[in-house]
Length: 469
Ligand code: FAD
Image (cartoon, rainbow, N blue to C red):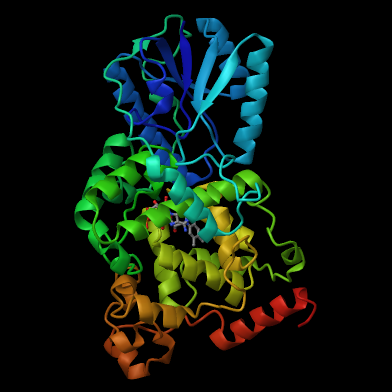
């Protein structure tokens, strides 16, 4: 009985419950190309599908690539190869859930079915509940509950060594089916990405191995140092597309053991928590989870947004982060928090605008993690930081990048400034600037906003939605 295996955010062979359920059954692996969330994600998907395609071909069942509406394509394809079942991994994005429900209904109308497996998360969002039977809205009790549930987590599944291709796949596919893949939108924008990333299962496995070797033991101490090599794992884009499963990462980290493990596992649970939130609060990508924030007096300003996007705010840690994002498709978590906070608090730009930019430029663009994090930073999330805690980008820079190594790397025009001024170039005397080869206003721009003024304005805006308290 042939089976249609529909690959989505599980572009791997190892620890793939969808494939593991297929022993001895003929399969047709398929991926339906859709609009990726953004340009950087499109670049990644392109290479990831190419890698998966190669791996599947080696196993005897090449990947069929289609473009179009899966609600029609998948049932048609199932009918064509005579598959009673379509198997896929469960997704949490609201649009994917709605689409899966419709695809399932279309399949059912023809006596077939869509079987969903857990393969993107450690624990299914709808199965984790508070003692009272409700979804969690606070991270700490959620992580405690999931930690307990994961005590008996079975080991990862092996990759299939051989697959049997189901006959009857549609003809007329181009010999090089990968030509159907989306092209990165700006040819030279992703030029630096290959120096930083190797999309695909092999790249993911190699990165995990290197992180276990060089990063895990120091993770608790170095995870907030944006300049550190292997300060964090860099696994997020691989995890997003399921090139490696969280279960593989979880087990490997635990097996390795030692210092840093506990802290690292807790980060993996932030990922779980974001998906849990998105599952239960599908409005999260666009609407504040705290309703009072609907009336927040944002001051939408295209020029301010653009300056932030380009890394031209005049605050070096923010600018370094935004440029790292543009150049590599990734930004260190600490700097994501600082840059996001600066946009929504000091510049009073709607968090949705910042989130949209991140979704377009991050290789790890993930609707759940991104919108949960932006809401957390903006203070309107389920478990958000209190609004009045406003990150000061200069003090944050001095604390987490004390010698300015991160800033010097991404804002080379400031590289020769002494440590004392690296996070506050606008305070440097003319002679110091000149000595460092910085022409104020030409090589580096003055601050977009005064920090004290921005802070007071943000607090006043917040007070206005709290009834003026
Ligand atoms: P590590 O420190 O090595 O952590 C391991 C894994 O845990 C990560 O790969 C990631 O899957 C998960 N993780 C860690 N922190 C978080 C977190 N706060 N929330 C959810 N999962 C987490 N992460 C994304 O994957 N996609 C996004 O689109 C995204 N947008 C963000 C936007 C903002 C404003 C902020 C503040 C954070 C965002 N994050 C996002 C979370 C976090 O910054 C990244 O997951 C992390 O920087 C990825 O680097 P890493 O793999 O080296 O992390």
